[in-house]
Image (cartoon, rainbow, N blue to C red; front, side, top):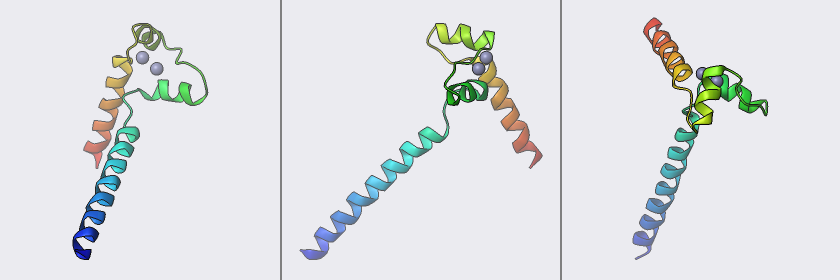
Length: 79
Ligand SMILES: [Zn+2]
Ligand SMILES: [Zn+2]
């Protein structure tokens, strides 16, 4: 019985860790372009026209996000 209890304890803690790391992963990759993230960190809102327009609609600027992703892809290609 003791080993069974230990097994459940291990499984439970493992699930906790997995869940925590999953949440951390979601945090590590925010769906926001760098310009908006920078502004947010500074306690401001992104002043780019395209981003302001997107924010009005409660969205994230897809223009900047796309640009950022393209940059990322290029970087990966260079590897
Ligand atoms: Zn922005
Ligand atoms: Zn933008």
